[in-house]
Amino acid sequence: MTRCRVPCVLLLSAAAVVPAPGAVAAQRASCPSPGAVRPTVVLVHGAWADTSSWSGEVQALQRTGHAVRAVANPLRGLTGDAQTVRDFLRTVSGPVVLVGHSYGGSVITNAAASDPRVKALVYVSAAAPDVGETTGRLSGSGSALGGDPAALYDRSGYPGSSGDAADLYLKREVFRRSFASDLPRETADRLWASQRAASTVAFTTPSKAAAWKTIPSWYFIATGDRIIVPSSQRAMAKRARSKVTEFPGGSHLTLISHPDAVTRVIEDAVCSVR
Image (cartoon, rainbow, N blue to C red; front, side):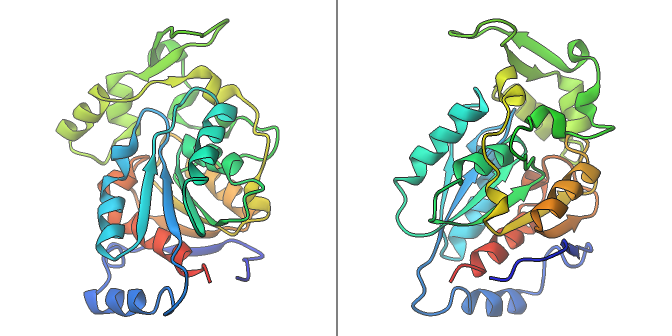
């Protein structure tokens, strides 16, 4: 597939989020082509989330016959988390489209390195670090995570942690206001109460690889994202020469509030695999 020399940007209007059923059926009927090997879509969640954050995308992809798996991301540190995903990929046969949300973008950036079966990367409101960059430095100017840590997180230790390492939980108001701002309050409160903690090490470990330099990539950017701000995501997408889709509004959890829009981008990446 020919990669974009500059970012290819698709702006979704409200009407374009859910296209006409006939158009969708026609696209899916021709993709992948008859006889082609269907890739497996592997979904990697981010911090303060779990595999259930992909439920809408899993349902939509399975409904149209795609093989899909959501992987539990340990959220303990970039090197080990990437190895966990890399080990999981060894259990999957055939080509892979690897998708990461938020911190999961850093994980797939490392897990896909030197794996020839990964044919496409999809970044969903995600970080896409270069070698030596940390996830924590990629949230961008104006991110809600740039405030006083004591006002952002509840901290706790965990077995094996040392030094300043600790588990971080987002405080409820931060979760409501900045993480899940386009979800109903009841839903946001439920997700806050069941959030997975993320170790500080996950955000401070330098990336050892940048798989987007050699693997075609897609980028889904919600313009209302307050965690990894859109300007930061656009800069990462530009250097990766990603095909970009911008969703008007939304939040950092647009994968939950608008899974159909995210699924369309994933399916576009799937259709590129020949």
